[in-house]
Image: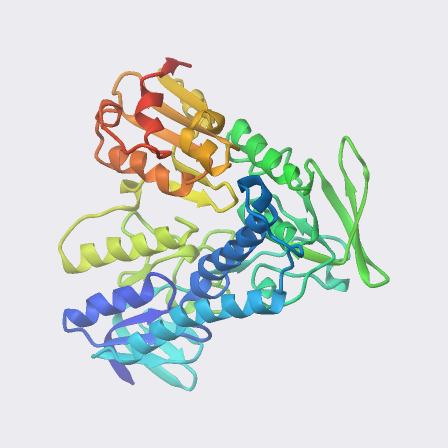
Length: 457
């Protein structure tokens, strides 16, 4: 049996970088990948979807050209085959670059096969068994499919299979009003599809504050997207070449018919065929591997990074997992998952940037707090760009004067949020930002002005 200093299973955002650090420190490392290098982000997530969103944004701006005094003749058409080809090309750059990096990495052996534990420190790869005292699991997650009656008898798409679509769906039904469903909804509406979102919860993005959910809903509906919330999906069935979905909505019990169906109701970890029971590794009831604050499992010498540990569902949390593990193993540090502040973005147009606690969470805590809110209609940069939808909101602890959370739903929100996030990590008083001089004209320049307008809840 071939033995290594470390085995890394999966090449998402954590695995390859960890391989780089371990080999730089003289370790012999085996990296195992059964399918596509780069994981979800590179192949079916961040990179391809944001590339498609960029194409949809270009189409949207072209249709709005007259608003800016620009004359575009002959109308606007989207070539879906060329759009997909651009997406494939950009994804391949990352995937192939990553494969080449690992393939040329000294002290790194790459296995292209499925991995399955034989014991706590032995892994079968194809017909070979390899071993190591340190094993790192980075296998990611995939789309979850809900138990909708009839779903097994109709064709449907997931976020992964949507990446193979090179045509324009006539009417796209989307089950799920979370981040994935919403981004695809706006994207395909701008490509030219009729789109309906069907969400079982009382509102879109139900974990967000109500004003954020409502703001996103208004943005989608303004572009002609039908949003049905509080819907109980009863059954789906074929209707000729279409898909018919019977739903139960309090205000409109009816049915929705579409040419295509996208199921976007969450993710499940890729842990069910790893043989974890042979290693004695514990999982929760959803299949996520249980880890501590340093991402260690209950079995000494086995760590879990990325989506499959249930401690984050983003590329940036996965990469931060790598940073935590590498720092603790190689640099003698004691970094922990709880050190990080929740932050993420919704890549609609305009985007939502989020950091820290929601207003709802702060109110529920009972702590004294201050809040400031400003509509994007009062942001000069947004007015100049003709992008005035959304608002900005900041919440501050009234006693410590530290920023507790923020939501920026508006142009540049996914970038502007870092103005606040970095100060939150520094545990600095909000006055540090309030007294800063920002560049004019920008969206960020309104942050200090907002902080001057803080009021108690």
